[in-house]
Image 1 (cartoon, rainbow over the protein chains, first blue to last red):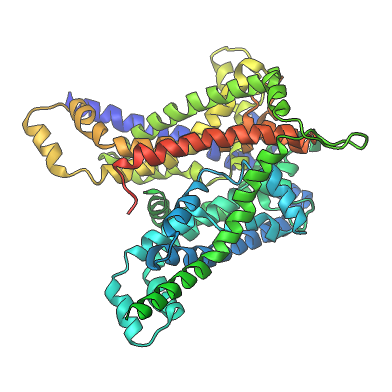
Image 2: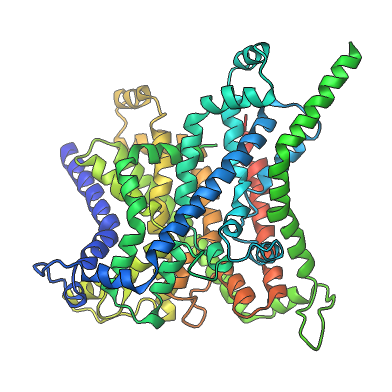
Amino acid sequence: MKALSRHIEAFGALLLAVIWISPLLFAFWAAFHSTSDAVNFNITAPWTLDNFRIAWAGAPWLQYFLNTFLLVTVILVGQFIVTTLAGFAFAQVRFPGRDIVFILVLMQLFILPEVLIVENYAMVSRLGLFDSILGVGMPYMASAFGIFLMRQAFKGVPIELHEAARVEGCGWFGILWRVYVPLARPTYLAYALVSVSTHWNNFLWPLIVTNSPDTRPLTVGLSIFGAPENGVDISVISAATMMSVAPLLVAFLVFQRQFVQAFLRAGIK
Amino acid sequence: MAHHVNIERRRQAIYGWLLLSPAAILLTTFAFYPSLATLWSSLFSRGTRRRPSEFVGTENYTDLFADPTFWKVVTNNLIYAGATIPISIAIALGMALWANSKIPARGFVRTAYFTPTVLPMIAAANLWLFFYTPGLGVLDQIGSLFGLPSVNWLGQPETALWAVIVVTIWKEAGFFMIFYLAALQTIPEDLKEAADIEGASRWTYTRRIVLPLLMPTTLFIMVNALINSVKLIDHLFILTKGGPNDASKLILYYIWEMAFAFFDAPHAAAMTIMVLVVLGIVAGIKFTILDKRTHYQ
């Protein structure tokens, strides 16, 4: 009886896994088949790369890839600098008003940049950053979440190391750079994975702030490419979708353990 | 001596504020000032060439309250939250319990559950389009095997919102699963042994011991799911564009449409303020009630 229920459970788990992965598998399969074969589920149909050829010719994908790559890099570098400095201030420097400011920072966790699209759009235009990669990236650089994460990581650094570095004649910046940053490396890695995958996938804000193929990231490019007005068929859309998720998906499958660890580290408290 | 301490204290304060300044400037520019500016502009009328914008008090808000579309969108979002939050949490819990037990092909199962999390919402929407397309889509093909008629899942008001809800659940359940997985791994083995000795069934053990221990994780996930129910709207752009007849329109999409398709910034601002108030209440509850036990330290 007990063995039977175990088997049923294992079967349920597998069935759910197959259901969960099936949209991706179908799209993958469709991307390599002609539209009529794809919609008729012709399992024996020949494989083809035509859809990728058509999709690739239909939009400046290389530029989109480059834009997305630049965007996630700009955001990550900005976030590292801003959150390291602020996290260090909150963790190790005593100054009046610190706790009140920290609460203000935590509030930003709930003032989502997504919700403030109207005013942020006005702000970015005023700064002359409309339709620029920096304009897409800037609102995300002072991430409250990142500041919080860095503060937690820096708080875990033993004070003896801090003191030792000071006795050796290190200044504030030297201590931060030589003691705290290296010790927080796992946190940086985790934060980088979360940040890159978030911004690789971000859509609404880039849609608003970009207005030309020179700045548009992949997600926005993909949505324009797949718009029904363009009359692209399902196999070609699948091919384009596969193309744009491939880098992140492959990276995820290779570094799966690190990814999951990163999301956990980033998510827990 | 006291003088020395004073200088040191002042030095620390200067360092502190210097270190904070980049974050403070950016947060002010892109979070605090825009929040206040939104509040301010929600109190003014939309300026036209002939009539410049003028102070109208709460008129934008009363306009919205009188607008049936606004209530439709609010209702939709409540259904969206009411369906996605409990269902994705329940599925996430089930996934975690399974992915944590000794089953064959556990690696594959975990990967399959988690993979949707790393896909962009736009890509997820494209994948699901393939399922929902009437006549050609996977769902219709499966239905036709059983002699069911073709259904235009995205094109009819009764099903469009639910089709959108399914995609959201598919996208976020695997993400929530990993928090449960991590929590499950912190439950000590002896509890299971003790339960076995007492002759408790696996169901009793799960219900009486595991679920209560997972409560803090559930609350944490719930706050995240709540925020997601405001934020996750990207797939609307691909699947339904809020239609048909506003049947699947959600608040953030409506704000976007109001501001960037109808160019009606004041009403968009008024709606933004209402969303911020709701998020503020959620934040208040989280920081006062939920964090009493799980202290930030």
